[in-house]
Length: 529
Image (cartoon, rainbow, N blue to C red; front, side):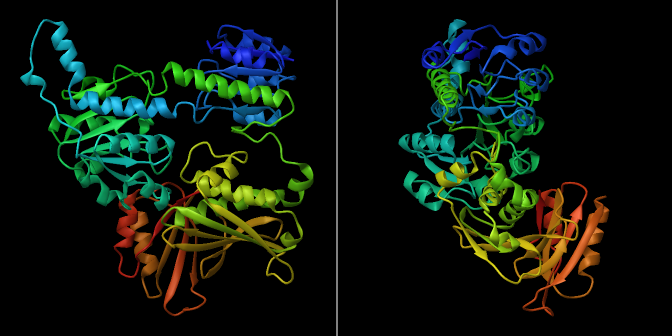
């Protein structure tokens, strides 16, 4: 067997792989050249420079695995790899320490004016009073996202004597308590409490431009902001304006909306205290060594007939298990996405009930699909391979029950989700007519509606003009309603109803707030499937 390694990966990868394959280290090459070379190789190991396109994979008839020595796999065509049965792996934990340390380094350098003081000193000046800084001791650090990097930052900050607040609905209270931090449930409450704010969340619909003009104005005047996560979490123009106005005392930024940074990036032209680094979060010798070892070991194991611990795609599901339930897979995943977005708090328990014909089948693939849906509502990179591992790491329990016998549908899957704040929701789905998927139950409401990319779920009092008021708000915002169903509560039909509305575009928090201001509505939610 043969392994091709490109992109200047540490030699230790070759040492790990040499017992199972011939290893060739080559320079990064253009698409056409790699498409020709790849024909002879069983495995490919890359960093970010090599783009593994569909054209390259089309020629990769011997290729069994692609290993990305790093976190992201944006430079690999996952769909094309999956269709060819090629496993794609990465190293999701290899840069945890490096990214956390860079966050702390930026916070201290920003607070003590270290870059500016250095430049002043080497230019022959001695401006001690000009660079009087601030201590972080006894200050409040707000952490958004308490994953592995966020947790490590929290430990370091507490060691420095800082008070740590956490805003992460998916982090368990037990983990927060172990760290010595304090949970703040809502961002509205979180913003004004922090002297420093650091971001450690993926780029998702919910986190895109999380820091914007509106949220910046809610923060404590003189706040300092650090971002080593994703560039698109911050509206760069709004941050520039907030720094120049004095609302934000300083910012330290390692990631940008467009990389490499273009000359028109607002942060390059900020007239204020800002510290910029070129995406160095994972750039340590140790981190590069760790990811090389991790990915090389996975490639070795796969070539030796074993499995990969960090696969990011699903090369196959056993046909005998998948075939009977394949029509329900997307429905199960969408149920997971919907129910997670209905619930408040961190997911604690998921119960899956198979009814009717489904009760006679192995629903293991459906359990994985539900997990993928639940987790991908808040996390990047969740797939059928890693969803069970992520759930286990987050102490999420999942159980299944089968109920044979009479059912209103030929087969139905029902999911119940419980969070650590004891919020409980139930969503069920079934196939109707010619295998058409439908959501048939949300909590105490029976219905039959298609899930769509953009949905509004609006429980409300059963009284006149409720639909008209919601429709008026949507119409004023030029948002089209593609489908609507209004259902009475089966327990209190005269008192409670629910609107399920499919719309054609995303809506912001401001519009949801307007809907919730309608008398008789208090918990409208936007769902993105």
